[in-house]
Length: 257
Ligand SMILES: NC(=O)c1ccc[n+]([C@@H]2O[C@H](COP(=O)([O-])OP(=O)(O)OC[C@H]3O[C@@H](n4cnc5c(N)ncnc54)[C@H](O)[C@@H]3O)[C@@H](O)[C@H]2O)c1
Image (cartoon, rainbow, N blue to C red; front, side, top):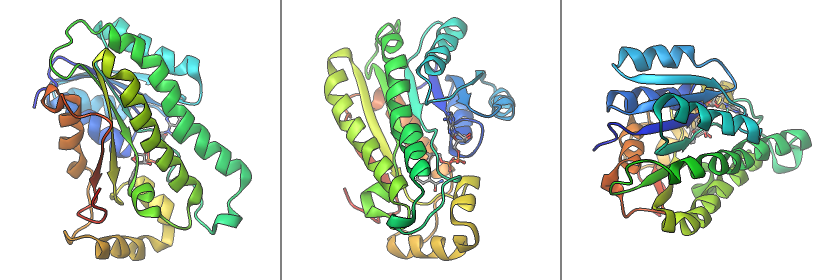
């Protein structure tokens, strides 16, 4: 599965899944651009320990100029941009609760980061991806991180569920627009993964939530970040070159799409 020599930008790379994607892709030989509101120095150190090269940038996905700066950093440092992993989201910081108790401002923030943030990053990245010097089999690839929240219909976090359903919609619509540019767009829909974000989101209900998630799966264990990395790398590689517009469930067989 070759991502070697590709340059891949990963949003939300300071911790959690984004950090794990960066480390894995670097180990596979990709150059990685690490964007986050928070400092990505720890992720960059992991990338370098894995023998890879990276560039860390401050990124606010809600700001189109900031998204363009991330792409400029990729092109300045590595001369190309082949892939984008839209992973940044408001997740751990959100408050669960009944649909009619969700705070208005929190609803808007969730949509601004989880939905509009992806649009901003795609608008910034696609022109550079069109220019990528070697359009080998597969061409450019965008991987959007959706969620089981959308495919299953998670209750008590309707803003998050709605935002992740929008991610699937963006994936499908954009895949149809960008096929002619040899840029593919796919999404992942993972169930609950053991990350700091999950711990924050579920708080003292974490164990109960993980048990409930597991009970719906045919594979009887909870997901860990390493369960996602191979699929992300495959979607970014030429080996998935005819796969676009798809949402791949990484949920142990909960929702069969
Ligand atoms: N962990 C799970 O169980 C799970 C399950 C399904 C989907 N997901 C999705 O996977 C992705 C990563 O999940 P995680 O658990 O690692 O989340 P996390 O909350 O641990 O990490 C999210 C990262 O995004 C960054 N971020 C937030 N707002 C940003 C902004 N405006 N600009 C740039 N960066 C910003 C944060 O600083 C953080 O580093 C998210 O899209 C999440 O919705 C997670």
